[in-house]
Length: 217
Image 1 (cartoon, rainbow, N blue to C red):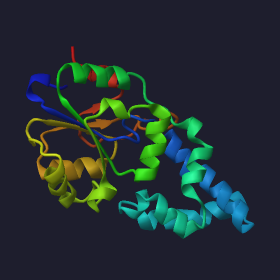
Image 2: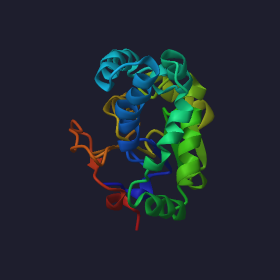
Image 3: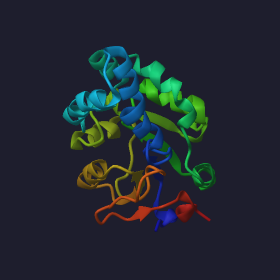
């Protein structure tokens, strides 16, 4: 699935790729509605009915991923609420084995995430994965989400990479399509970004169920 001698740089998404998306899904679909209901005197169902349209409006934009945006929109301390359930943050099996094996191959390893800096810090503090990367890149620092084709050109200015010799792994199909349109040659999707949800349709992208499948020898 990966011809390692042809790869110089490994770029990895975080949520749903290295980390189980169950945390984020539980946070936005259960925990935020709970706290929003408590704050506004609503039932959980009323809170969900109010929140879902707000989520849909922001989806695919930089705001969707912003802790500060949602703190302002909802009147809730989103950073604190994430910390309330941070015990649910989980690294997928074989991720550390994969990162260590790629390091032994002397590949450059870069985290490229849409997660807001505050969310990234919570997750790196919890998982201690940060030391495995040569660079951590937040799309917020570039002012564009990964779904935007222009993101990749901006990324090149701070993290130069060869399109032909870079492997990029992500669970988001819109992000993968954007990377594909930019010309990144080696792309992999994640079939089970949320361990508690069914497998997803990867729409023709090569895909992995586990990092065990691509650990370099």
